[in-house]
Image 1 (cartoon, one colour):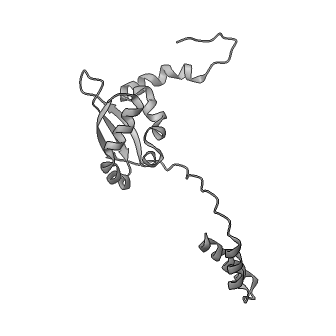
Image 2 (cartoon, one colour; image 1 turned 45 degrees about the vertical axis):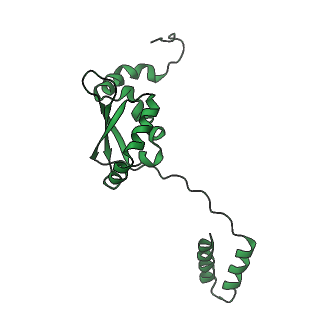
Length: 156
């Protein structure tokens, strides 16, 4: 590993590799790539349901390993049916047939931040005039505003 001169700032990753690499190697996580790139490897849908725990290989081999996952109870059935797809995605990431089996155990997956929602499409002029016609006879301003809001939500 090449270290820059002491006069230049260094990346923190250069110093933490000494500590992190043995831990990841012990857990069989191929230098942590499986953890750091998990959402990119399997996609956002599967990443919300699983956490990669470790990879084990048969003695003396570096292929046809087993990926151990911690899975939510609701996601276990989905992953059982999609395990071939999941294995294919992980093997594609590594570039060879690194894994051939999945081992799933139920565990707690910390909730991820929700995906940002796209803003709703604005109402068309025809929808606005229809909504105005439906609420024109209502005299109470609060009720009228609430019904307009409800109508906008239904129209979208």
